Length: 473
Image 1 (cartoon, rainbow, N blue to C red):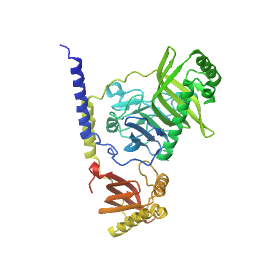
Image 2: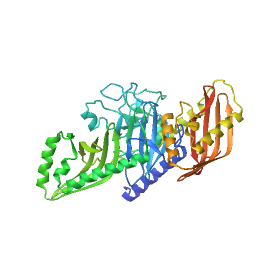
Image 3: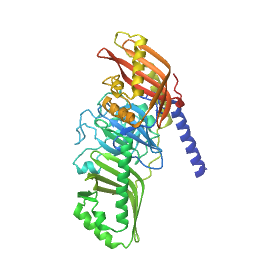
């Protein structure tokens, strides 16, 4: 006898919850970095302008220069960096321009399909997500090629080792499966990530949303002169209309309908190269005519404001297939990751002069004192030229910390339970950090890695974990 619909739904829900439970036990095995519980980011990639209202959203950012993938979460109006993973991109430098150039495209893209291991050639690993490259603006610029995916790999990950796709270790793409939503989750690819202060981004988001609302209002009120003035003279629509053809087309519709009603929902804003991309669900009614779908506006910045450079409309996409990796595939990849972690040989370290712990202690104390005094020159001199933190190089980190120093009138830091371990040419320092400033406070486990540079010990790596997330000294 056939299982009732309600019972089938309950069975599917229980199966999904079991899979989530399995991933919660083993989800980060073999990955480059566990899901981070660090606090909200003050600086984020400049393409993340408004990921969307109402619900938590994940954004994937790829930096080709460092071969890293960053997973951001936008939650309650704040950005959190949740993971940093190794990846590999196209073997040739530069933005993708043509079929077969073995380059990875740069810009804003959306995942629009999903392929499981049973549907893939071995080169793509256990899971693949095709992107919408080339998007409308890429095609307008004459870019060509196809088949750009984010996928796993069954071989050892090596830098710049793909034909143009973004490839990850199988365990890492497995951990992303429950977070990627088709037609919604974006992937933004840079050569080198450009960071920007979140406050500046929020101000820009407000200006863009005001522009879009004015565009909607003038359209609904049939104020045609104001409406058409918001378009660039170089405008192009996805059905091939240039500015003049679009103006004539919209003028006819404006006269045809006595009343126009337009509602926008789920508005999101990103950057695609030198253009701003605004995506939303559009609900249109003109007398008896109804037209609903997904719209994408490409905005160009002009004279302190914006002009619409392109407009793309599509009907709503089909409901994504609920297919997921089978449990046996998940278990196999998790077992392989555990085996690889046990088999990995310890890294060899060159023999160097070992400083005593007192020397390292004085360096760390000087670093803390400089930060509390907001002595930026004294503080930043403690860092190694190759220092990176959450995707920022030293120059970006300098700008980030200088902005914080300017923002807060007073900074207080207490270091407790400090432990120092010196091994050859490397010093590992951990301590419980109590941080307070005018508007922010936290308590967590701080970890510093110091190495020699020009005979002086400098901080090359720095990390922080929230005590609430289980971090222990």
